[in-house]
Amino acid sequence: MSKEIVARLDDKLHAKRESFDKIPVVDISPLLDGSSKQGVAKEIRWALSNTGFMYVKNHGIPQDFVDSVFNVSRRFFDLPMSQKMTLHISKSDVAFRGYIEPFGENTDPGKTKDLKECFDIGPERSTLEGPFFGPNQWPSSLPEFRELTYGYHQKMVDLAKKLLQGIALSLDLSESHFESLMRDPISVQRLLHYPPQSGFVSEEIIGIGAHTDYGNLAILAQDDVGGLQVMNRDGDWVEGIPIHGAFVINIGDLIQRLTNNVYLANMHRVVNISGRERYSIPFFIDADFNATIEPLASCVTGSNPLRYKPVTCGEHKFGRFAASYAHLAKCNEVGRQLI
Ligand SMILES: O=C(O)CCC(=O)C(=O)O
Ligand SMILES: [Fe+2]
Image (cartoon, rainbow, N blue to C red):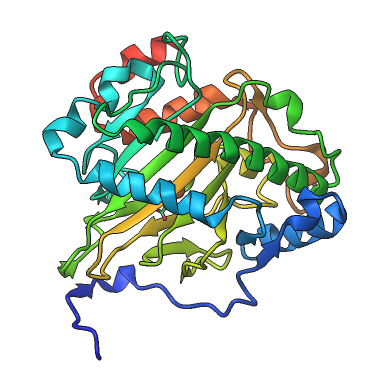
């Protein structure tokens, strides 16, 4: 049965479908079980320096657990708006936890309003300690939500640390290179919902505007709806087609800075014209708030001269948050004084 076309895309929103030999799918079991860490590191290097993003499979997170987090996420976003707004991110001060409504965060603020709605969770604290560290907000009407989503967050922290061991090896660093920068890292477990768009769709409003991720690494679980577009190193938009059981891995700004652009933080965006609701579950891991990130000497050469000054993780991340959150626009200066 042919599918009814419900949306027409602005030319600027087209993405091509790359063959999979150009978007590597890396089996990371030899990294996790230690049988061939260097072999996986080699594949990671190829992926991140050529295409710039990759899928990982055999990551050890059971699919039925991922599915149960998708289920509870759907139930959360189905709650009435008035209930979701009681958990609004602005109520968590600068801990940045809770619900973000459509257009509440715009990741390409000069160009695009983001239609997505989100829920953010981070490392649990009993009181506000400073930017990115404070109590989470939990929906009282979904008692299982907390255990499932926070459990998923914990598993993602562990997986991200393993992936960063592989990334360190891929850069000829010791596998523990990132440990001293990540004793108590900033991390965000996010749930996302993208309503479908119909009619004429332009860059002005899409699921999530073009952006790079801010930190070290993102691990993304997506449902089977599709709509993720990733820019490859040639500057072409390509479809990040869902692969059942695999995660999409994106490098964030901090790894781009660390590697002096040897690995690029890919631009990506979401355009959901499938006619279906789309859900995704990205996890972001950064470094410690005060960790200084500067280019590795091994990545600075005659043909690739030094591109970045040192920056602290917290300073970089806060700046990107302040630029993209509607609720922070007015308190940008106030927020900055808290750093
Ligand atoms: O939903 C997706 O597929 C991508 C989400 C994303 O890029 C983000 O939250 O930073
Ligand atoms: Fe992203």
